[in-house]
Image 1 (tube, rainbow, N blue to C red):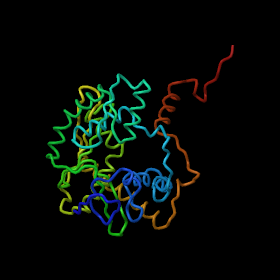
Image 2 (image 1 turned 90 degrees about the vertical axis):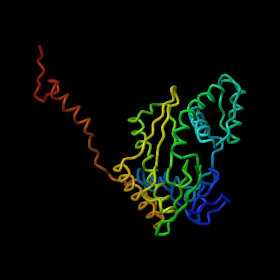
Image 3 (image 1 turned 120 degrees about the horizontal axis):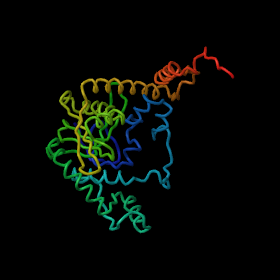
Image 4 (image 1 turned 60 degrees about the vertical axis):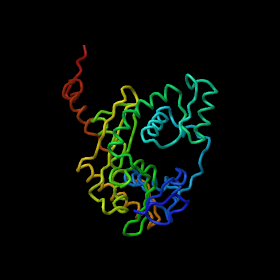
Length: 310
């Protein structure tokens, strides 16, 4: 597998280290490339949505004043836990304040975000450190202390179409990939399994496995993708999840279908939205069941019911 330090351009398939997120999101490939998030839009919404989300097909001026793009407290704590657990990542900016209510604290927070740092209060840093103390041994056991972080992989398929993905954390031999996610909710095995599928993580795994298999054919069938979920509330318990064979098979089929749809859009230049219809809107099963039960038990709903007037 070709490994290159990022130098502002893609000169072929391979792994590119140290790419800034702005460069990755802008799609630096020679022609518009497909990533996991746009592929999901092709399948779950429409080609019009995929085109609108792709910077090379529908350029959008960034809104620097968009407050909604600012990280949340949970996101900052999660990012800090990532950096502490892996020993790499954005620098943590400690803000010496009791809370974020004062203007001084809020300004310091904005300055840290602008500098690419993670602003944390002392109590938030202690929380992130406690989380990392639990997740770090799990990560070290999986990756063996040798890892590649935040690297862009670029590959082409047999038809010549380009693809890209951003690897979160991977063992240096590309045989183990780990996606570490923190949650303010429950991280039990049942909930983590639900999150893998409801968040689309299963789809991303299949997409990334396809890319790594193209770049590292010797690793086909020998690669592990692990999702590590950890709660942000004490006792900061964590849960490791891997897809079943059925889950991987379904994800592979979905990714191939999304690629087919994307390539049709690129070749034809046609990016249609939803089928116009009109579509027949049938009631869902639960609504039919609810009505049937009510009609059976409520005699006033019986069509033969006659009101007796005195």
